[in-house]
Length: 94
Image 1 (cartoon, helix red, strand yellow):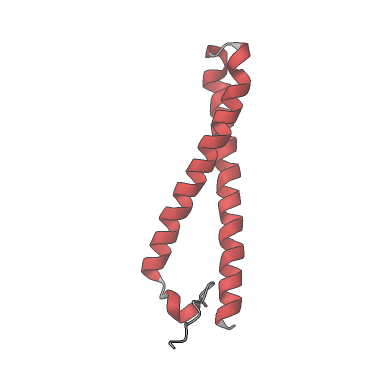
Image 2: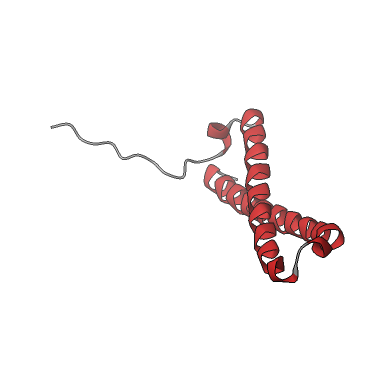
């Protein structure tokens, strides 16, 4: 495989991993909410709880993604295996 294929596969796998972590964290937080917190909150405020759980799960997935990404950057030589996504074009000097 060449660098472009490696880059595309990495982006695809990283995106799927991020979605998986977001769904998993949402489900865990939702189960914990239903089991322990739902009875303590008035019925009028329960829809806000759902929104709050969703936002927290997105934050958790972002933090987990960043931590694992930083760990992989330390372990893998990025320039050796991946192609840059954005390349700067050189400006001609007059």
